[in-house]
Length: 151
Image 1: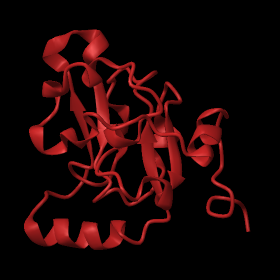
Image 2: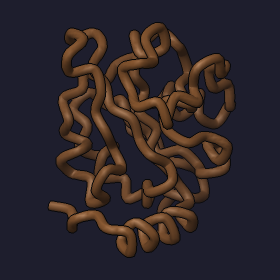
Image 3: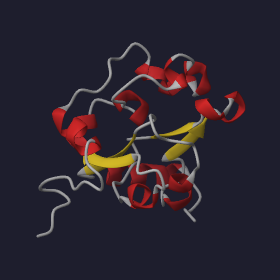
C-alpha cells in the first residue's frame, strides 16, 4: 500500500520520476479498467481510473508521467498485457499516457469529459507514431533495449 500523498512526498516523487529512464504506457485498446495496475503501483495517484459510470467500454486507466517512477510493477502484473515500459524520451512531451496512445479508438477520445479537465491535453492530438513505442507494443513481454536489458 502506498504511503499517503502530501506536498513533500509529491515533490520527492516528481524529483525521482524525473530521473526515470522508462515510463508506463497503457494501451487503452486492450485495457479493461480492472485496476490491477493501480493496486500494485507504489506511487499514490500515479495511475488513475476513469469511465466507471459510463459503461464497460468507457472504462480505462491513465498514467501520470510526472510521478511515474518506472518501477515496471504495473506492466508485470497486468493480466491483459496492455502496459509497456517505454523509454522516457518517447513520452517526454506528454503529460499522461492518454497523450501517448497509438490509436484513438477508445471512447475517451470521443468523450474527453470522462477524465479531469486538467489532463485533457490529448484532445486534438495525433496518435503516437514513435517507431520504438510501436515496436514495443508489437511484442509480447518486450524489453526496452539498453535500459531493461540484462547487463
